[in-house]
Length: 231
Image 1: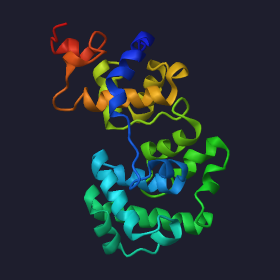
Image 2: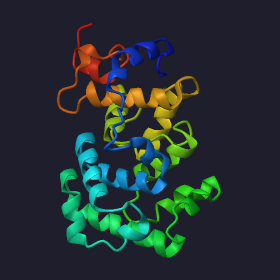
Image 3: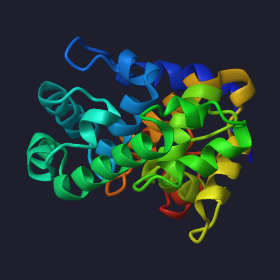
């Protein structure tokens, strides 16, 4: 099954209004442009909402310069307090300190040294950093090489892939990633399409109350057919 290319315009119409809006306080463009800031932002995003991630990052930025040399020496309690708005603050503080320490010790405080390695080695090296799993590594990889090569899979992408029926319930991260890359016409829509599809997964294919009747993919979705959704 393939995402119908004729629905790309409808996807844009329905979800472009949800597209990430930058603001001076957050400065998302700066985050994306700086691999270390992007890494910290992604760690803060783990198991929380976009709004909580934003609040935690802004709070962190007010207290610390977001640099490996600074965060590697941060007091765990003080750092935890700074990122409390994002939840799981003690675990995330420990991860941030440890990942910063490893970057300082192994790469002279320069995450760019990992990202400048041959492409096939970059993901492998990133995953050696504590707190960096498949998703976090792919966020950094996709910011450099694009989603056509390193498609980011989070809980929303996992859910919609399973509901559509393009993977089964036991599918691994790699299985879901491969299937979604084949399903979406990324050669046409690129990262913009991947982002809009994620917004559909988040706002329409809700975990508890999916809005199947509103979904542009209801005619192709195994889940909606199983629920007896009337068209």
